[in-house]
Length: 562
Image 1 (tube, rainbow, N blue to C red):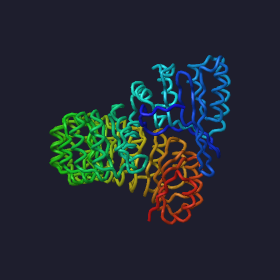
Image 2 (image 1 turned 45 degrees about the horizontal axis):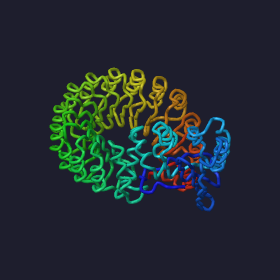
Image 3 (image 1 turned 45 degrees about the vertical axis):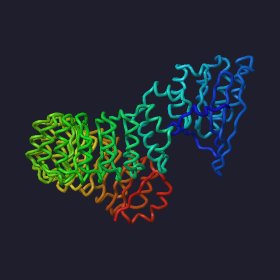
């Protein structure tokens, strides 16, 4: 058929529809409609020897047919062997209902033979299919990103019909900076044009595949996306202040910026991008950011509502400035900082709408800080207190005053079992509880209480506790059917616990390091069940036995520890 030539633009990755795998695959390569003809190209792929054969069918001339039935018969011949059953809905705009039967029959038969449909080229001409209403129907049918090469009409209608979702924007940006896992396509004019056409407002490069991108690529995205409001550059380890300076220059509308774990970013970049519009700033583990930069952030970003601060070199004075200068804080991360009890008390008094706080490894706070939070911040939904100086009364106060709590981290806390019993009884919405290394807590009693009162629980960490086989594990399976993550490292559980969890839960993550009483047979039972396991932590002693297991289950990531 006739192709779009210069009237085409590159689109982001192809949508793939999967079905039952077959040895031979026939997929739709291109689909052209014009005022007088319909033409198709197909690709025949044999999985056994990885051979491809592309076939171009002679165009069906609409003007040469006299009845709708003959048109339908011709189209049925063109579509024979294709897994393109959805095309029948598009054809309905051209054909009478009685003429669709042979087409639908051919498509139904094709869908049983083909493995998948991959649409590479879409070209719509000036006919009925070019009308806006029909075009929107086609976009909904095939998906906006169905074609790698699409005509300008398709692209423009897609942009006007439905804005890009955040996920689609992220895929488009990642395609530019890495180019399907290669060195990047930031010089591709078609992909770059799409940034402007779709008015991209979100860049999310926190994906594992983007960790090696550099300032040049972010600079190109910044120039092409002046309406950016959200930028996530977390764990892009090679980025420096230059990318933040570029974003500050070209994107004045940014409201959310995350550079967590960008270790080359310094105070210069933070000061450059700080502006009154910022409501979220992620700076976790940015070791080169100084306390003075945090003070400047407090002065320039009065609307800041969510912030994650760097670690231990951040002073109590700079945190106090942030608490005083930003009146809308609802989420704050202070892990491993030098924050004091006095500053936390001031935070609780000034920001009673606080919902999320991370105080992990804050060694300078006392239980009085937690009591102040419990008294003033009754809307808390997430509180992290790992390795903090807290006690049972502080945790009980949180339980009684914050009924909407969904997450609490209490690793290594010096608390008693009664604190967890109160948590379970007063906070039924809990979905994430971590009690690793809580030496004074009876893990079995804690699990029984959580199983009785917290049916929505999804993650429970009990590593290095006294949990054992028996009634507690059975109660967890019965009372909390939504649990998907369990930490049992350093415990005395046996194969019986693994079998119970495998039979009753759809686990995706489990930690079984330092569990001397479990065997390879139990691990095989776990991975062969319907648990949907994706991550397992095991001792190094299992490595030889699990090599074949890892190969047999490609979707499972097994991490071995000494």
